[in-house]
Each structure stands twice: as structure tokens, then as C-alpha cells.
Length: 320
Image (cartoon, rainbow, N blue to C red; front, side, top):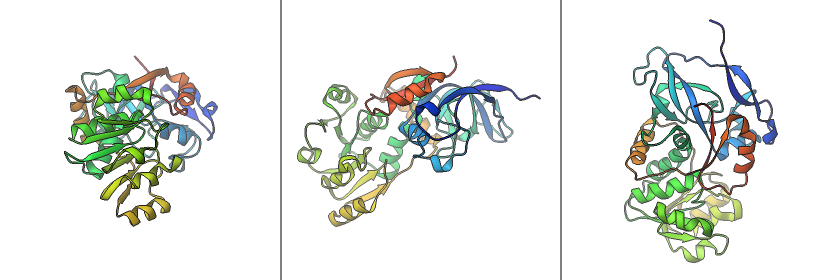
């Protein structure tokens, strides 16, 4: 059988948004236990533009590279041994992370058990916005911090992709949620469940927060947010350091204060995606998509994402 082409956005070298090129490449074929999924939409995440620039997960990639990890689409073909999915199933996933998944394309292949059935109540655009951000928030709160009802959880960068989901998950777990964001996002975050809002541009969060049990730090070393978070965390509490891990300066300050720290990297997790789909379909969690772009507009989407001023997520629309 001759090779079949597909549209994709590739990069051949690390650099700015201009290195993103729209072209035709060969459609992948599913190996045993894998599925071929026709991508309807692909979510965009900070790790995408960081990797494109030679940071993020750049060290695990090879050129030419198709960026992207968030996908929502329809199973087109299944490889030998697949019993959990069938052609025609609507699915969503964050396959392969941190290895390349190639989501900025019309088709992807990955192990069938990296995928979960798409939330039935939302379309592919919203579903594509969920996997990486939702899994990051869920795994940080549930599997790493083991958040319990009645605890106080501080979420930094609460208006972003991961942040607005972390607010909702923490509230679902019964926590009291403190969120940092610019003031014009406060009313929206209140609707999502935030109990206390802090405009980080007007006041230092450590001056008004009081003690918390868990910090979901989505900012890191910028403005010393990670180290400053230690001062509001009770002894024995936990700072989950997501963007920069736990550098020595953070470990030292936390150790002196009796505060625990944990680095974090999200993993593919179809079981958690199934749980998250249930929360979305029950109306307990909603995903915010600020703007969509056509596949060939990926560079423009990266430029907007890099401003770090978006509300929720950006998504590429790939096929109908």
C-alpha cells in the first residue's frame, strides 16, 4: 500500500514561532496495541512553545518534529490486540508525553490505553484543551499532594490553563481555595470555586494569604514565587513546584521552615482522564477556551500563548 499524506505543522530547528511550518508529511500507521486517531482539535500548552524554543522537552525530541500533546478526535483504525477501543470512538488524550506525540497533525498514533473516551457533553475543541492541563492539575492535587477536605490550597496563576482547572478540582476535593490572578479574572475564578482571590500585581500574596496546607505553584522562580510560597505554607505542608522543579535555593528555604517540596511532571493517565470526563459531563468542571486557530495558524497561536495573558486555553482546529 502506498504511503498516504496528511497535513501537519513541523519544525526542523528550534527557534521562534517562525520555525513552525505547515506542510504534508506521511500519515503514521498503528502498531500492535496502538490506535490511529483522526485529530479534530489539538490543545496548545506552554510546554509546546518552550520546546519549540529549545527548552521544555527539547532534549527528548528529534528533528523534524511535529509538536503538540493534547488531542481530541475519532479512532480511525486499531492495531492488533486493541480491545478497549474501536473505529468511530470519540477519544481524547495526552499520548506519549514527554516523548513526541505529533498532535499538530491530522492523525496521531499511540497506545490505545493512553486514550480515554471524550466527555460526551463537550465538543472536540473543548476536549482537546483538557488533557495536559487537567492531568497536571489532577495528578498534582490528588496523587502528589493528596488534598483532603478542609485543607487550604493556594493556586498560583489560577487563570491559566492548569490553574483554572486546579481551582475546580481543589474545590471538588473539598478544599478551601486561595487563587492568585489579575483582578479582572477574579469574578470568573469566583464562579469556578475560588474562595479567596489575590491580585498579585497589587499586593504580595504572602502579606494577605495566611497559612495554607498545599501550594500548587505554576509560576516558579519568576519573582521568587516558589521561595515566597514557603512562607505561607504551614510546617509539614507541601509546595508542588511544577514549572521549575525544586532548585537548591527552594529546597534549602523549605527545609529550614519544615515545609515539604515536590517536583512534578505530568504523565499519560487514561484512568484519570475517564474520571475527569465524568466531572465535566456532570457539570462539576468546565474548561475555558479563549481562542481557536486553524492548523496553519500555529505560529500565531504560539505568539499569543507566549504573552502569558490568556484566560484558559488556546486550541488548534484540525479537521471537522
